[in-house]
Length: 309
Image 1 (cartoon, rainbow, N blue to C red):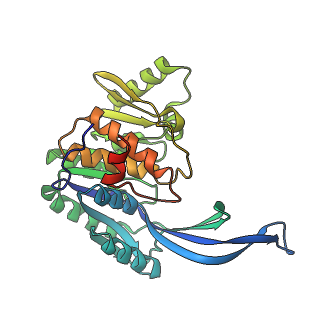
Image 2 (image 1 turned 90 degrees about the horizontal axis):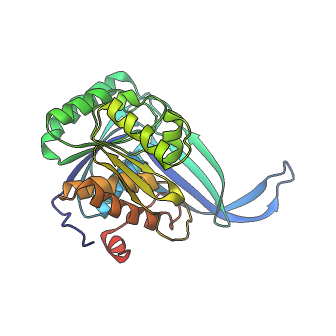
């Protein structure tokens, strides 16, 4: 499939942002204090994570990205803002002085993740209300809205955001979290992974039962489509017209972290560029096959996507 022109596509991403930190080092001995490896850190990397990684993926696909979120008035928040500005993303980060910017610190030794440490708190409601007002004002300048929910409290008003976006005739794509999917009612598309979906509807025995559960949930929530990402089983799109499946593309999997960000970003960019849901899913599947071959939160460029054809 030829790629559409994406330069005019405008995607507004709202959600929980975080700073992904990587400490890379050599492991040559076990600590005498406890049976754990000693990592001699030799290199440190920082990357935007969460909704910020979604916005990075939008830009890497040639589209215009606007990111709306909340950070703390701290060093991690400043680092995140600096990294995002360097990526060419239009950023509006509301600052909450009482908030600690979410940081995920990964310690990597011999190309293997040895440990992850999370730092996080929840934002104040006053800051979230201010963000909600800005969200409504930015709707006219976008083609598609992504709501990236990482369960960190930044989307407390998600129901109102969905209603406002749909009233403005903007498609709303949601990357969900947790068991309460009623809060996503009325969205255009939900993109749960296999584990997230099982948490909500329970297990299934075979494709027929899976489709029945997916369609029942889709109708209950009043959403147009549900895209289930299934790791080595590929991904399946459920709409009122039935199901469409894309098999996983054969490729060595190095790291699946952030793959969901790439999927929803690709779906948004392609929908904003005029493709239908099934065509967008084909390209999202190809983009995901690119990023799982990279370490950590990563992006897929238009050139890399074209090369997968």
